[in-house]
Amino acid sequence: MKTTRQMSDAHEIFLADLIDGRRTPGSGNGFANQMDVRNDARRQPWSFAVDGKSTLSRSIGVSLTMWEKAEEQAHLERPALALRWYHNQRLRGSTDLVVISAQTFAQMLGELRA
Image (cartoon, rainbow, N blue to C red; front, side, top):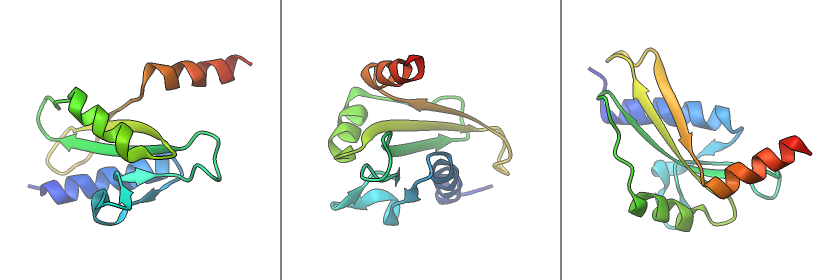
C-alpha cells in the first residue's frame, strides 16, 4: 500500500505539469512559499496557487476554512483546491477535480468568449 506522502507527491507532480508550475518545497509548509504548487503571476496571465488533497477513499472533505486559507496563502496567484481520488492502491488511475472561485470561473469564460 502506498503512503500518504507517495500519494501527495504523485498528485503534486501531476499538478505542477498541469499548470506549468512548480512544486513548493515541503508541500508549502514554509511561510514565504505556501501552497503545494504554483506558477508565477509575473510570467503568466492566469497564475494559480494550488493546494492538493488526495485520497484512496470515496470522499474528500472541503471546508470554507480550507478555502479561506487557500485565498490567504495564494498571494498574487489565484487560489485553487485540487482534489484527487486514486482508483487503486498502486496509484494507477485517478479522478481529478479543481475547485476555483465562481469569479475566477466567470473571468476565464469571459476571456474565452472574447
